[in-house]
Image (tube, rainbow, N blue to C red; front, side):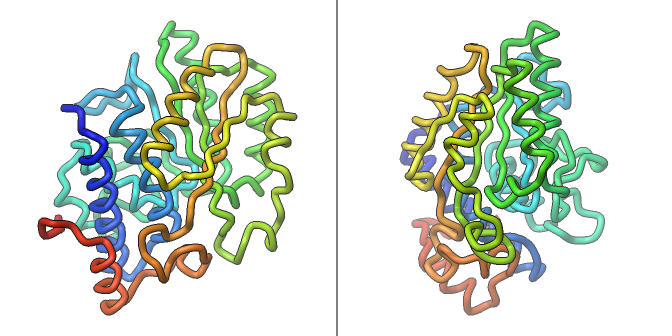
Length: 283
């Protein structure tokens, strides 16, 4: 059943609570980028992407999603669970021994919703382009979505894939760049500036869209829907989505310090009070 915008907004709060609870329980994980991408995942799985349950690896005539910056697995796992791919209770096993919910997504345990392992940065677009071309060969009209971190763009393989996609007119791909300006060692500007990213992507032959309000659910839905109208025109499509690292928790927002750091008990309690839900929020 399709959810209303208000229901989806409430779900973003629940997903944020899931993220914090998961990383706190094992004192390990990446909350900052996960919190910043919550609206993107909720929009994608709640309104935009065409998929079926139960999950199949082939996903014939379904849209596919590939997470390239796999360290933000907490938001991915929570989204998949909350949209029915696997039981919500399994979130309790995050990063524990023998869990299917590893720190970076893997495929060997058969976790529903995961089609590639994504831990090494820079590889997701290359995989997605192969899938997208395979869909074209099969006469499959569905789309392939990808998500990348802005710091990840410092990987050379990304730019090879960007060049390939335009040269081969892979126009059934919609890639999104989580542009929060932060990475593990500091701001992207200080570590290795991306310069005029919009102009660079256009120069590489992509249709480039940009959304400044990447933590506004309705704005994210709108830009993804607009991107769909640009597919099938001979050019791949990319969205530069401006988000806030750690969004929703004031002491985590806008700083690289929470890229890969778990909150302690007191910090978790503070965060939960900021992410209040009317009903008790638990697994």
